[in-house]
Length: 135
Image (cartoon, rainbow, N blue to C red):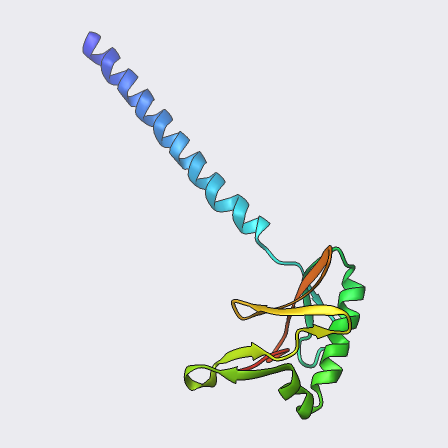
C-alpha cells in the first residue's frame, strides 16, 4: 500500500510539472507574437507601389500617409532618387541616405528600415521597392 501511495504522489507531481511546463510554453509562444504584429497603413489608393506607413506613433495614420505620398511623388523623378540615397558596399546593396530631412521630418535608416521622425512622433515607411531599393 505504501508503494502505491508513493507511486501515486510521484505521478501527480510529474503531471503537475508537465502541465506547468506546457502552460509556460503556451504563454511564451502566444503573447509576444500578437504584441509584435506591426500596424501597417496603406497610403496609396489604388495600391500601386505599396506606399505604407508602419507603426505610426505620435502622428495619425492620415498625417503619416500624407508625407509618405509626398515622398512617393518626390521619388517619382529619377533625379530625386539620387538626391535621397545611394547604394554602396559590396555589390552596391547597402543604401546610404544622402538627405537627412524631408518636409520637416528627420530621416534615418536603421537595419535597412526607413524611418521618419520628429520630436514625439515617428513611423516606418515601407512598400514594394519603396522608398529605397539597392537589390
